[in-house]
Amino acid sequence: MLEKFLPVPQSDFLCSDHPLLLLSGPPSSGKTSLVFQFAINSATASDGNVVFICNRRKLETKPPYLAQGIDPSSDVIHRIQMKYIDGEEGIKKYFAAFHMHDPAPVSVIIDDFADFFDQGNCQERYNNSRGRDLAMVRVLALCLNAIMYANEKGPCQLLLSDTHNGDSPRLLYIYKRWVSSIYTIKGDGFGSYLIRSGNNLGVAKSAKYSIALQYLVYEGIAEDEQQSDE
Image 1 (cartoon, one colour):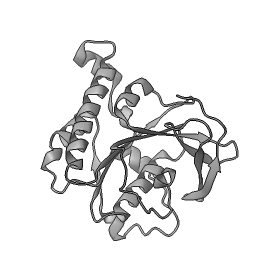
Image 2: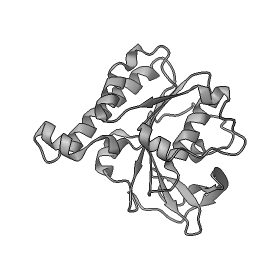
Image 3: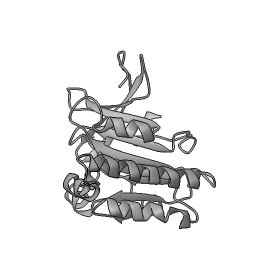
């Protein structure tokens, strides 16, 4: 459901067969605002907590925009636990101990996932020109195992965000092996953006939104033209 990233009522938010999700879009398209809204929707639909993993400096430099009417001091916002890390080791440590969380969070979000993997450090560690790919694959495998374990006891999803400059996510050849549901963002040419599911073929729907006056604004659902398989 495309609206899970937007400030609209969520009737079946926790009913999903997709434990790992990816939201990828161009720079400055409001990805952090969308994944933070996902966190709000997830916390609203449950009594559980949500963990939002990100780089503190990046978040403080460019914080997410909230929808109008959301109270930053509300109980829902307080149930979103911010976890600040600087590199892939922080992600590995968190998910290696995931089984110790009782109960587990209903959702975990990792903002700008690929940016936690430094190309030079990964190449040096693995002594391989594709060290970054190897590091990402290992971390994704760890994440998937942790999330599947948590789902044995209750609903739990992992959402990743990433940035791309073309028409499809960078490192798609890695993501599509581990991520069960991929969503992409593109501009509509008039200042708004469209979220589409990369799993759909043919005529599909897009959720339309914009960032206006420092607010995340939902603009409705639009039908796309025929899509090609990414």
